[in-house]
Length: 238
Image (cartoon, rainbow, N blue to C red; front, side, top):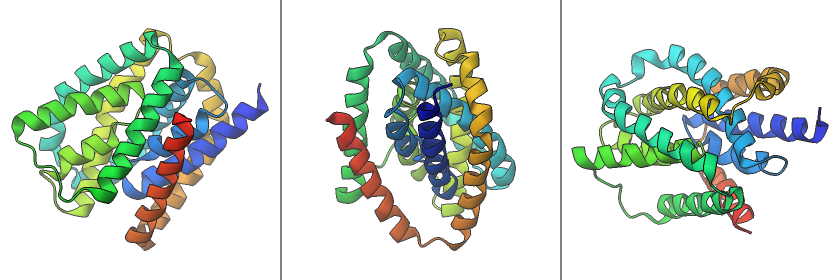
């Protein structure tokens, strides 16, 4: 066992899924750059996908009543198509190029959040297109969250319902991604073994995230999150 990889995985999972539990998305955007400090992109995606499976199962049971099921249904088919296309690219593309692409994606997301003058308005066709693109990025990087937020925001206005629906969307995507990663050979039994060692840390991140969500200063937290994302994006590009 590589203790350095175990330490990096522990730190990445704790920080990423703490953020994921607090705001309902962005866990991968935070965790993935940390994991890439000590492992290949394919391995990092495998680990994140396994923990997303645990996270989704836990959070969906807690937030089921607040989830907008109609939005989940709208995004189901497009997300599955996008995830499969993304995993095919992940399987056959060069990791270095994908890492730089992830860095650019993160920085573009930060720029949109900070400087976007108004929210993007989508019609039915736009939601379908964004669903495929979000599924694609979920398959390649496990980072479709920001694009799914744009889709869900067009139909869900209440913050609790928005967060819960995002959790439901991630559950749908994860149920597609994990089997596809296994079939492609990216997800291996060794990933499951390492996951068990880090699982207690993951549970603590979930617990702490739930406590934070109750008392959170949302504005300050989002500003800190943008700073962390910007740093992560720059590191990946350089």
